[in-house]
Length: 429
Length: 107
Image (cartoon, each protein chain N blue to C red):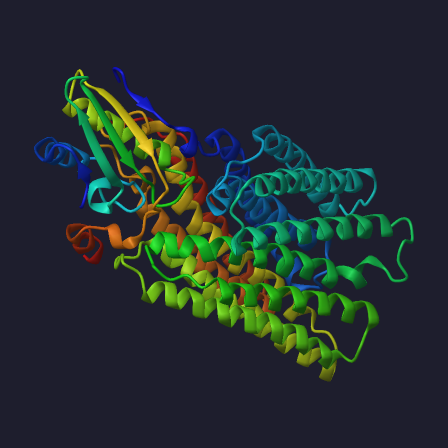
């Protein structure tokens, strides 16, 4: 590169070293969660407040969903705000705290020991979230660009912080009576702040930017996204107040209607982005992610049935279990399975080939993983998911075990492809 | 591909070379994608100044694409000093994609 001079400053993005630990950790957590699911399948035929069910839920929510989203957002937030990530060091600290805290918490739940281990795990996770929020907040404050996507991401982070604080208080509530009721009573409050406030807001905030980018679509509609933002937050805040002041059960249909309306608007946004795309061919990874938008509807339907059921005949524990499963193993997992292979290969390609670009033919990022393994993973995942949900609803242990086995195999294939990408060595003539 | 230049012949050679620099996500080359705005050839000083953009600022693949453009220009015009400047004014838009690029995306 004799005499070459490049103004690289505006193109310096987050280092792959920041992002990779999150992805690697999340993929192992997914495998561990499906392994636990396989060995604890009979627990899913009982009540949802079971140590193994809580441990698996937190492995999925924190180890899998949150870790991969935290990692990806360190890479994607600079794209959303058109500015740099404030600090790589804070990202490493956030990772380290969560990486230690999550197994402590999961082990404590699995053994149902709510003493120092659960408390310490919860405090470390809160520390990780606080540092993540500081890093994101300063990055956004330094950026000149304000946009709806960044507001979604930051608000989602705030809801995650509230969720983890409530979670820790519930852990303490097992031994020190902090609340008027036992911790089980507050479980749905904690869960919905996480599911709607953290996962839904963040996925919509980032997805609404990435979907048109990947499809090369001209469609943009910030006004519609602001409506989605308002409906979700109003719905969630209304739910929190209703939970605390216990109105008649049918009142819960109000926040559900607000969130459903937001989902329908987001569905409309995705459809318009898809219809106005310049790129006609849509790859398998994006199809899985589009499928996950449709899969959002499944937990909403179960939630409405649950509320009507609660109103008419009281709580149905099987429906609650199926609802939680469709959220964590359905919607959230489907979007991550697709998006991993839309983001990770590019991060590694950038690391391996950026000095070789333009000098000859380099492999396509899509060739860094096996598409056959990806297809196998997708088939096993969908079959396992359907069987496991059926097993929960019918309370048949054998069906649960077969479903869990298929999900375990899907997680194995996912890990195979992730490792294949991470360990990729340069291939060039 | 309306590139501002002070040498049509050299610019055609440069743009042909830049067809080998592919945006890895879109799969389309930077020339047909409309990322190249201006190429100035300072013949006595043997200096080539390329002004380009990216589809989005802080694009995760931005560094690779800029490196690719620099290296392709260096390979095509050995011995010349290559400078690549990024600008986001005007920002890239879909209207900058060439007819060939649109055909490629429409496949």
